[in-house]
Length: 369
Image 1 (tube, helix red, strand yellow):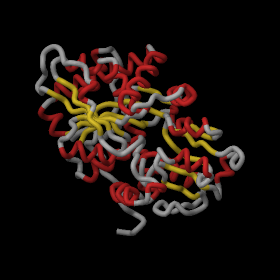
Image 2 (cartoon, one colour):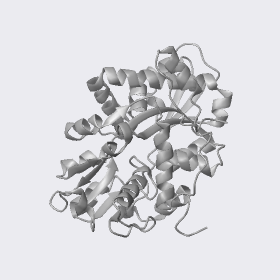
Image 3 (tube, helix red, strand yellow):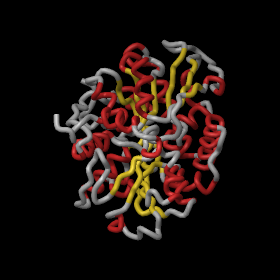
């Protein structure tokens, strides 16, 4: 196998071994340790489903606000009745996939690259994507004194969260479409791609060690608060300005044994997204309250408001954009051509959508065999 063609798993493993300053912990979030959130879960009421508990995983991040708000408002727990939610938060996609594989969680909110990597690594045996959650929330922000136009990026140093992660792949693809050359593994080329943990990126920007960043929210808005300028919203380069940033995965074992529980979580997610859409200001405050409960800190308005406005919460998993992101990773030399057939099982989602009088979501031909 050529050295420049490797799996996303190897890319992530390499990144995780690099020094903290050049990236590693976050797939699209913050921190590194998984944290139990059992004490904040509302009491389960009503009839139990086929499992006493459901172990839920997600990131303490705005792009996972369906989970944040769904728990904070008790919407998810209400749909589960007497089946109790046991939550664990993660700040890196690989660790959440490991937890799913080990049975430490049953269902998780996660980004596309970790899901693709987990599915291909297991040869299609470990997970299914069962619903969408969010789109957008990714921006290219730059130092306006050094970079005034997109063409000015040539020769500059731009941060991404992690080698092979969702934003890294998107930026490498954007560079290639500009006709520029950058080596995916080293990040060296016409544009220098500097893999930097999202927690560190604001300091790296402030020190001048990077000239900008292609990052998810709220990191992008943190940089803007330091004087950076949004040069490109990633949504603008996708059809219909939509691309998957977060979706819901479930272990195949749990899906087979407890389809009723999976359906209840999906129904709760759909109801949460509807509540977010109907109550945007209350939902934003709810997500921030949950972030404070999880991390000890809430986001200030100057960061929260623009970050929230750039994220769209939706039930459709945007399956065609998942395939496109996998294709981009292949093109960059970070992934062997994957067989994603079977990565989706939208049975529960489409049942819930039909009951609500909504159109079915498409799996883009990648449904379970």
